[in-house]
Length: 71
Image: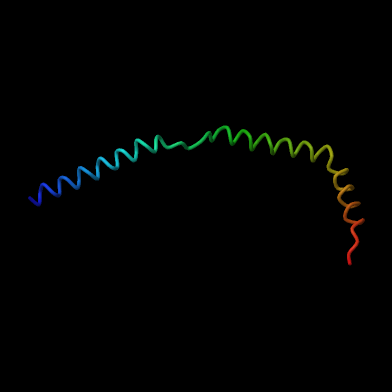
């Protein structure tokens, strides 16, 4: 009788695990090469903009900070 109960518990656990895996679906790790490409392109755009407009952005920031008045 103990063997039947043990077999039943093991079978029930195996079926529950199989159903859980089936419902969860395949593990999706995402599109890693796509994210890498987006990151590299963003870094390239920021670098290009910084090289072209760096001095103007620095002057703009300095002007804005100098116009701020404290209490």
